[in-house]
Image (cartoon, rainbow, N blue to C red; front, side, top):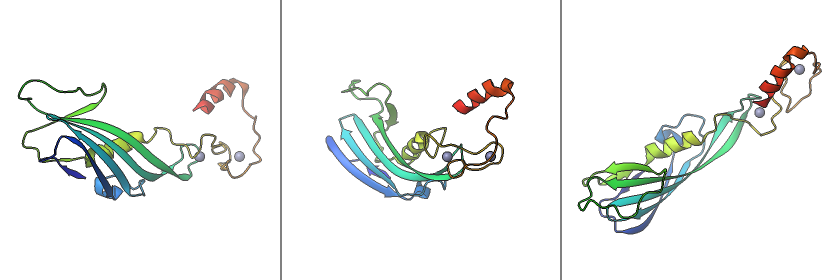
Length: 171
Ligand SMILES: [Zn+2]
Ligand SMILES: [Zn+2]
């Protein structure tokens, strides 16, 4: 995912990449081709990059342990700034919160693979659910309550644990 910037004219440039997930060192959860659309706005001393990244993965539900497929769609921005601007002035300023990468006069190409990989991984939620209302597994018999109903009594719990159960069920 390399972009040649050595003779880039000022203005907007578009690129598209398609890559195997393993080629950018994503783990085996990621199953679909990674498609990246990139827009670069070149100014004299800066490059403003916007990336639109799409792929999909197979993840394990934290609640019912089933595998499910999930699309991964993430946009990111990166500003490349040439070090030591000759006149000490930056035209335009990166938006707050934008990531900045310093590049050198001699930099001929930028490789976005590492950024793409990172933004994909960051976009995977900490808590993975096959669906928002996943019913999970029965704590007693292990039945997958999305698919079956078990005969375990539902309220055999010591009332003193009831509060704790509420807390757990919130997660
Ligand atoms: Zn689930
Ligand atoms: Zn059960």
